[in-house]
Image 1: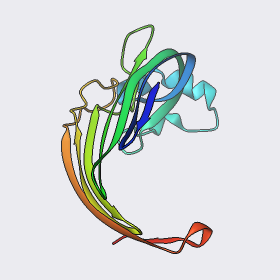
Image 2: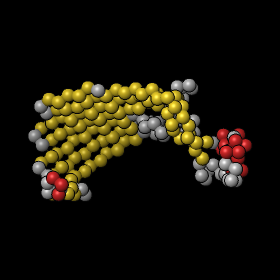
Image 3: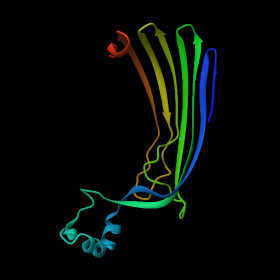
Image 4: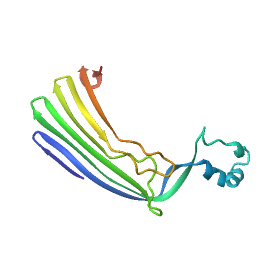
Length: 171
């Protein structure tokens, strides 16, 4: 990580790479996967009627431990652009991979970028931000790719009181 703070600006950039032995994750089973292993499940769960399981209505997941690598980058900066006006920028990306097969791990977020402008005066804050999220097309075998999106948000808040007795009102 690299962090900085100068008058009117601060930020940080972090790169990470975690090589994890036996990383535990949930792996949904397809109907075909489940049917191919029906004898195994019947033996493991003798008191249950596994023959009638419906993976369409109730997805079946399995906890799997596999050697994996999680790597990515996160960056954030706050800039004072004028008295009482602050801009912020955020970027993050995570890539999760199964080491043996180079397949993606499930439930990894797509690349995201966010930028905003905030007005702050005493207890009043108001601002807007835009979030841009990329397509998620690097997905685990049972996941569905999703389209990216853009989100524009406006907000306002006012804080009453100080310290432990502070209350924030947000419309």
